[in-house]
Length: 363
Image (cartoon, rainbow, N blue to C red; front, side, top):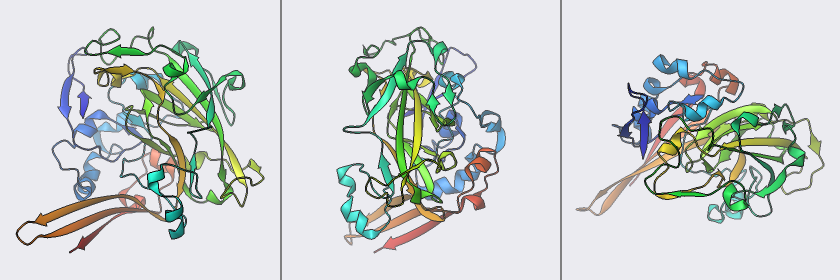
């Protein structure tokens, strides 16, 4: 994988490989990602480096100011890979009890559960409208989301919007489909796909940490929950997660109707604005069909606010002479998560994040 770095000439770019993304922050920059390129992707190494690369500290702070509203400048700023995104981690499932592990095996893919809601898939249709010009994007209202979404058409999610009859699919091998002037994208060829859906979460989730996960969106997007700006992400083929705990509404409660909703369900409105191209399209335009939209699942899930496993890494050391192996398990545990707003304002400290490392050797 490659990341683009700014150079002295606005029309030239330098390419430098990196191994693993570091911990994310309110605004994740490509320069911070590249700073990890010469270190192995082991949790113990990442943890020791976290203070030195934390974008909430040091010289990068000017790029990391939290914004209460989405900014179109994000899609042409090669220093910005995400706004308010959570750290990348090993795929994990969350269960309320040991028995649920056997009832909801991960090999079945994402399914609704007591700690998880699948917002996409068979039978799930969202409201949709394609906006040919980025100058005509809809206004986002508090609580209700996009202006005029009631008159929009329905679309299946996940799905490339071009395959659903909106926009135009493009194929390219080594020639860019637009004038090459990185990081700029010609507005004449760029358009936005606006999605909106309503969903419910159990009222029993109150007091838990709630995460919104987009498995894959091309090429970049801003999102809102209940009309409140959540964040931005680009990289079409990696998940993007956001902590939406403080945006969730528990006021609108309907009678229990679904499995796991014994205490009623609270309605939420999710709005997503997807851009056909962004500055990352210069890296993703390589001998492929250029398609856009929400192309993979969207999931909302909850974790314990007091303590939870956030990431783990297994490292094995095999000795052929003795035919024995030592397996080391590094586990990142988060406890007493700092309040999301305080973290965005730069008040996050290592001890507030409550991160611990646990090493287990199996002989």
